[in-house]
Image (tube, rainbow, N blue to C red; front, side, top):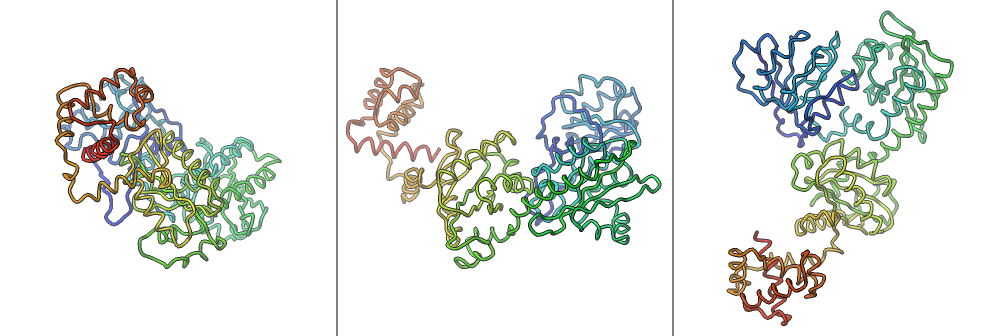
Length: 544
């Protein structure tokens, strides 16, 4: 019988981002070889799954829950896929996960995504990992193992693991100080049960950790530069481990483990481990420095009510008088991108990028935006340039629209006022691909004009039969005098630049402006008429 599991968002938790097809394939490829076929949208949400046994496909009617994010096909035999095509297509899943079919995947299934994994004894573990990805929404939780993995992905720890594994011919895993797996080298058939279970469970089996503690292995790993050997025991292969120590404080940060394969350890392995541990420790230490001030502290500074001016400056670990730049990032008309922006993955990514802006920069989500609080001398040009580069990076990586608002020269006591300024600018300026970064200084006129129009007790105060006549004329013609007037006024009544912006001839613009005056009765040589028309156009645009 088909079984369906839906994972609703739990009440009281921060907004979640549903796992995507990209997340699923990435997680499986770290464990085994995976083929991704068909028209695959990497951002396809797989928030639900249905498990279907091949033997039940023909016998059972269509389930009510067609259109699941992920359909997992079990119980099939090699070569059987062709007979199951119609039933699989009828269920209209977003993606299909199946074992290697032994025959080419039929074209009828390639209209969507098909994830193919090898046959073999790892199937149950792979299935468990796939369902873990589907069932574990991405949340902003700095204490979670997901945060550690997101941090690792953006501090090159996976690159360290892979490079070290290639250089030494071993299987590498990097654990934090709580034995949670942060990164590891790619899948290999030589992985022993401890490695497989650690990768699938994101930490080694508890009995294994307790055994290492009882044997005081972790005490030996805390000695900088000390390489610890774990001998082979049954089906658990030989290992070498080395601790990572914070380069500034000497605090233990975790362990790099090298598991032996069919090739014995080489004579240079210990030297490689020492170098890798120092480099990895530096990466982890740098990332954690960014998060040394808690997210809650930054959010308190942003909140409308909270500590008094300067109360949190000592905890910020910056010198007085403290000056900051506050940068708010938001997604543009994209709910998935908005939810991702407040996730731990986004916090980790922006934290690493923020180092180039200020070594002690802090990142925190607040009210649907992600804020960067960067201490340092006031430099609006630098802040805007960093924001522009960051928005461009996010847009290329996430394939969604983002924009930023910048407030420079912020004191510790005025952070919440700067946050209100950012909200003010974002609320009263339209998102623009040409100008993805806004500031109150550069957009002051736009903001003040919008606020003046909002302050009108009645929009009808600007009501004018001449403007109504102009709107009515545009409604029944295809000339678009309103747009011509907007552009002409923006270029201060100059016909050449207006014509270039409208991609038409100057004489056409002259004709349209003359036609506007004739239809509506404005005298656009009069500055008062031009001002009134500009205000009416702005109010008309705001009212949609």
